[in-house]
Amino acid sequence: MEFSVLGPAEVRDGIEDLTPAAAMPRRVLATLLLNAGRVVSHATLIEELWDEEPPRLARKTIQTYLYQLRKALASGPSGSPGEGRQWLETRPNGYRLLLQPGELDLHVFQQRVALGRSALADGDHARAAQLLREALGLWRGDALDDVPHGPVLAAEVARLEETRLATLQQRIEADLRLGLHRELVGELQTLTRRHPLREEFSAQLLLAAYRSGLREEALSCYARLRRAVVEHTGLEPSERLQRLHSAVLADAPGLSAPERPAAPRPGSRPIRPAEIPAGIAEIVGRAAETEALERQLARPAALVPLVGAPGTGKTALAVHVAHRVRERFPDGQLFLTLHDAEGRPLEPLAALRSMLRTIAPGEPPDSLEEAARMFRSWTADRRVLVFLDDAASVQQVLQLLPSGQKCATIVTSRRRLGGLPGSGGVRLGRLTAKDALALLGSVAGRERVERERGASAELVTWCEGLPLAVWAAGQRLAARPALGVGELAARMRAERQRLGELQAGDVDVRQRIGAAVRRLGGADERALRALAALGDRGLDLGELGRALDLAPERTEALVERFLDAHLMLDGDTETGFRIPALVRLACLGPAASAPAATCPQSTTPPRPLPDRRLSPRSRRTVPAGSRAHCRTASYSVRD
Image 1 (cartoon, rainbow, N blue to C red):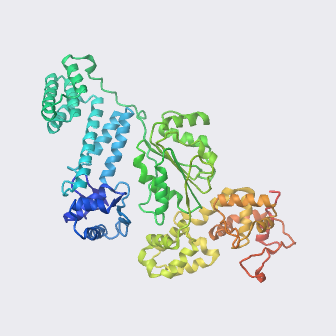
Image 2: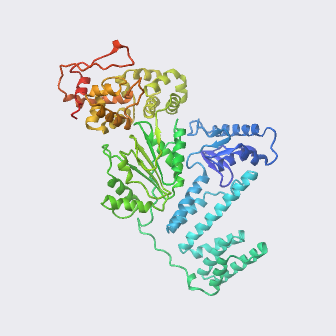
Image 3: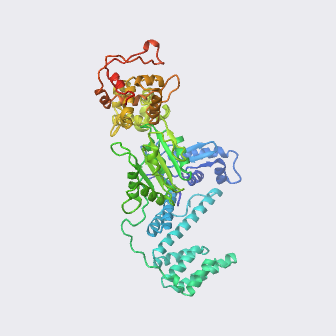
């Protein structure tokens, strides 16, 4: 969907025009568009539509206009990306229009202007001129020129026009620094006649004309400006214009045109990385987390960890938010995955060298300290978003943080990251049943899910609210229209088949969770697999210690590591600690056979493990020599 305010108001879904025809709904739409993403109060809408004479049923009338807008926005072609999407959000004190990055021409304009101004400040005049020219090219006429203006829109349109003129001045400034004086004279002559009191255009014409050998035009320009200023204000032009006029009269050497800069060598132009991967337009069930991330990223030198179990959608949500806030970081957005393809943590030096190759010419330093200093220097005065995905530890992250107060860092991790400086962070849990059903419907089809509502509820229960599992199940259904939701749910009742059904394309839930288990490594990995073999049971610290033959302090430290890795659930005194079902099943997969293979067959039965949720008769032992017993015996206090 494309929304336009830099010219006539327009809403287009592809080639179809969805712009409301009636004037009042169009004014409501225009007011919401100019405040997209922010709540527009009832009072603001009433002021815009009726100023100081609202009708008795003003709020009711506004609700009618909003109903018409919702209907228009939902009437796009069937199957379009916006179908079923929530465009308007009702808040207690007003309404908010929900747009994605790139959908509103004003937002694109503002982003390119910010990038252009940053390039101009950095001395990259060619890039600045290009970006500012692209920004101005988005204008198709006066802002909202087909919409009647009340007091609110009139003020906003005046502000936009001022921004457009300021951007035009900066684009001309970039062109002047590139030595394009003669090419600018005609454009500036038109602008000074159209805006006779705008001194900046006159100053630019005076300079461009003089440097083009048109001294008479330069002096005439000053005379026209002075006449207009005196007539309208009774004052003389600014001191800066007077000094410039005196310099022209005196043929001051400082006014000579600089040599045109040579074409930049490849790679010599300052680089502004834009490395955030492509994201999805809408994240289901994460509105509160999205708002929290955006709010925390607005703080100075923000450092925001986003942590959660494997498969909870950390990277997808972080990418979604990064695209929403990227306009705040016009100097670039860096993205780095902190594990290699084999699942090994990336060393801080390797990570820094990777980022430095993007932002600085030449080979990065071989020393961690030097590389960190160079990265901090580059980020000190810039507005950069750093996205560190899948962090292994706090120590890995600390060397990779930018130093600038206007920078921000998002860190995703499967582990808790306590100890990061000044961080609040967001913890991503599992989806509620309602949100899991919504996600399943968004992938497999809403009508299909509604048609088999009971089976769909059972299916997402087997997925434990894990977004990756729900998505994989939805993809299975989408790929096989003849497969019923009930049939897939029935297949997943059998634990041995469950993870096998949660594989779609290159997404494999067993592989994803199994990789997280393997990252534990060594004794910790063997312990988790041993506990998984005991079944879906909740155990307290004492029972866990007896099962693994560990002292209490070592048991507590081990459980803390499992909790940090989000591979165990912290229950209460009744339920105990428990391994989530999908994690438990991943532990019992093919990768689980390795520890048991070296386990000697024992003839001594292990002690019974009580399950406090079962009756005393339900206490079970693990048979000696069984796979479960081998896994238990393979982890001992000696590991």
